[in-house]
Image 1 (cartoon, helix red, strand yellow):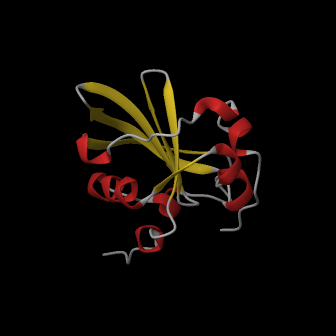
Image 2 (image 1 turned 135 degrees about the horizontal axis):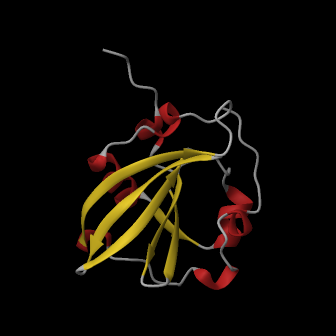
Length: 130
């Protein structure tokens, strides 16, 4: 799957200030749940490109680092497909997305945190079919 960088902040509908300096304490996040897959280009980016289960989603956010929108734009590829779901954080229901380019976000209570994972390649490797 070939991906080209895009303006991540604009593509995600975020203003540059939408990401705060402090991220969520992922250790307090519970019950990551995968709800859906979406693709803006099904010929280039398919469900198999971001086929993570609930446990792998938690692993992604545990390994990922918090980044700002400029870093995300300048140093990471924007993938046109993603999985999304919900997570419980400090008693609140929050939304998350993980894109096939090993980037993600968590939205909670009007705040958005952006993540990139340089140590997650094996999570995105193709799995053998049974």
